[in-house]
Length: 138
Image (tube, rainbow, N blue to C red; front, side, top):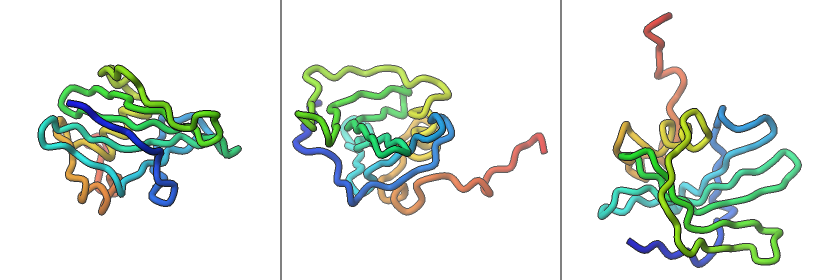
């Protein structure tokens, strides 16, 4: 299935999400307004932007496949680059690194176990509330 990327992320639609796996001073922003899940392949596709406290940022348009724990980068975006949008010619699936920021994004926002969450549900409640979880060891 082909995914076409014609423009970078919509800055006005970026929402910051908490992500403990990122280094200090780095922030995860995602475009939830344009998040979509294609019913043919059940892949969640969205713009992801990592921004530093100093204001530097890099973005990527990615697909997250909850069923297999994989991601694919379709394009990169750097607003200050000579070519801000760079489309990947032959994107390929890669495993999501356990305990990395993509793993946290998948488990806390995009996936419900091995299925993608409905985009409208994600927009309404992007992250699990910490009060919803009670450790069985408390």
